[in-house]
Length: 56
Image (cartoon, rainbow, N blue to C red; front, side, top):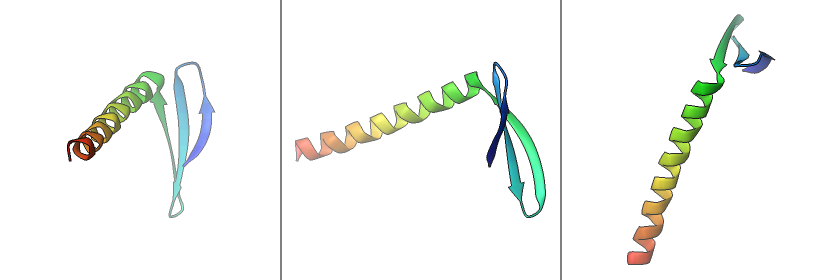
């Protein structure tokens, strides 16, 4: 996957696989939501691990 171009609200990527080429775009809002969801998930998982270690 290669960054292709970017305008104000959309980042376009180029995917090259087995001789095929495709282009798709992601909006900033979609990326922001995905980052937020993943950070929340990782923070919760880490909190659970730390809590388990502290509780014995």
